[in-house]
Length: 211
Image (cartoon, rainbow, N blue to C red):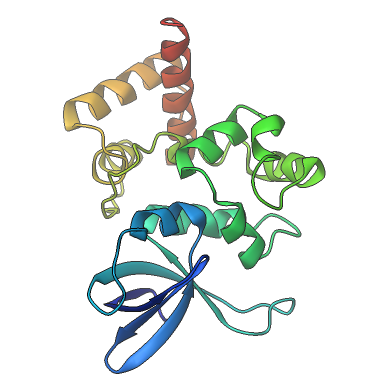
């Protein structure tokens, strides 16, 4: 299965790119947030590297490659397509704003923001929030432009700290403080997912103090 491609741009279109590597040209669908990164790239000259989600479903029998600038963008996309009636192409087209914005709206139950995504009306927005609320706080903490690999660690607190630093762009000191504050607010937290949610909640409450 294809998960990563690095090669020269052969063709760059409105919603897709053709990347040549090893003498083979791969057509890759690009969400708008990814397409915008490559607006100034030149065909036949510049190279790109994309993290790939390979999708083939009963509703979408033709294999589709969807490209992302980071593993965490791809990871969020693959959570999004778990929502009923949200297929790969629809999910890709809906990603018109940063992952952190979409995830934050889901965590805030902000139907108005989600329904403004391309191809997502009010009913689908409500379904997305219903199925993903409480599961995407991690992505809401993403600092755009800071994408790094995940290191899996047994200790869930250390795991969360590493994700905050290596994937989400926080400093080690800041991540440690966020986790300590989250655990102080809710010492019953016992899983990475719960801890991400508590960290996000604290960040949100902190930002309100300055409004």
